Image (cartoon, rainbow, N blue to C red; front, side):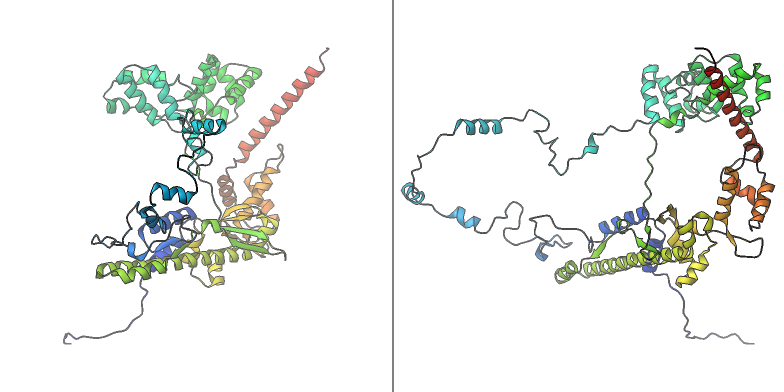
Length: 537
């Protein structure tokens, strides 16, 4: 078979990812905050984009086409166009007009120029007060409530952070530069809860200091306010606070060093380790509970951004649900076609024409992409509400299994589009605010072959069973499985354990200890109150 070369023409169809299509896909998955940032950047970059609610200031005329300066440094040659030379109509003619002689002026005004009247005392006092220098801060304009730039938040004190609070104490505790350097290095390692990393072995090597110097500075830092700060673990934090209260005796030290027994509610083991009786161990545990395990949390930390819903769901008058977009999260931008038409008449360079043509095309595509994004979000949210109407009417127990394909097929879109739309979007409902992905849950088969159950509804059922259990009849995972199967839910034991751990619910053994301990405390308190009430007056 001979090998030859030849030219062929073929036609084929393929999907080309244009920049506009990539931009539209990117806008779909942005949250409302990221979208606002993106639009602000486009407004600064594109001169043909403007906000829909932008208005020209009062008394300011719109920009004329002749005021445009092109890239070659052109200037406006119109007379009177410079700053400070704008006169009112007829102002220049009035100022250049000759008023005539003194006699003509007096005849025109029908009075003599020497005919002046002295001011009244009240008017003279007001004029003197007006000409006097301001004496207070508000008279200088700093406290004028009518000023548009007046902002009360400028007078609010800054929130003190834990690092700032410790740095202030560091400057008083040490005078040497080396000690202050070591102290500031350790303060920078303190987390928001007030703890240092457990291992500080490399601190001396990095600072070029001895380990004894680092230990000395650390011992001083652990005496700073708040008590318990700069500890390396929970036991050390509690020990620092107990020393501050002068309650760190040998029995309390043994208790602090065996917090694992306290976590397991092993009261017998704690009594043996501490060498005390039941009454003393109860008092010691009460003192431990009154301590602060995270002393740094009362200081300022990073501000949390308030979550703003993208969609509102409200009950309709016909018994259904009304879905609407949150207009506050939708940026409103327009294409300034008038400005582009004026520029197209003045621009002479080909490069400038190409730049503004691209700017017009990008601005038009952005406006269309924003409109399409809003329509897609509304369409997906409406379908979610239709599919999960039982949740909005009756609660979490009636949440149905739902996946992306079901919504995509209903609205005739691709699954990837629905996935992007539901990312970082929130829906405000009568039962709270939820992320759109919350309504997509896996399905769990029914025990009797009926309709499948939602995984979120099963979690809610498990939580209800555990919350309603009696202290004397704690439900194990096997018992929960039996009760769920009796309710028509076919679920495995490991799935129950996984859901329980995801909801941070302890095991049945731990719950039994916690509830028995709580019950014992209640009975002890009741017996103590009863003994006090029976004492003779």
